[in-house]
Image (tube, rainbow, N blue to C red; front, side):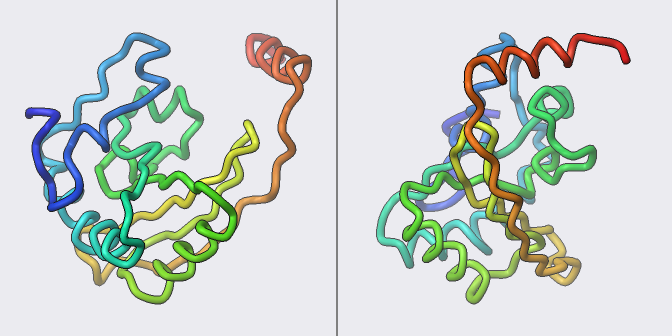
Length: 165
């Protein structure tokens, strides 16, 4: 499937399959065509309405992930990212994030809406939507605040990951 395939007025497939961890490991992040309806639904139910509300582009940091990339990024086992039913939206500022988070909660059909604090100190809005919108749980969560790791802490964590305990 072409990466420039247009999913909706403001979103194309490339925005959902672009992945830094894939580049880092030299892997492909090609989405199977059977998940296309899921992405179309996510655009229709959440992203296009948010884009219309915000009057500006919605920056996607993570969309579809292959099972291998999901594991490498320490995603949950059955992450909806693996099926094209989830997206992470970059938060430009705290006030913008709060505005978008509550707007999605109050105006969109979604399965999960999560304010995520990443290990590197950044934050994003994770939102998922199932193709059968009647199955959406409307779960709203916030991950615990995580402090930014120092280089020494990051090296120690990487070292510990290689050890067999």
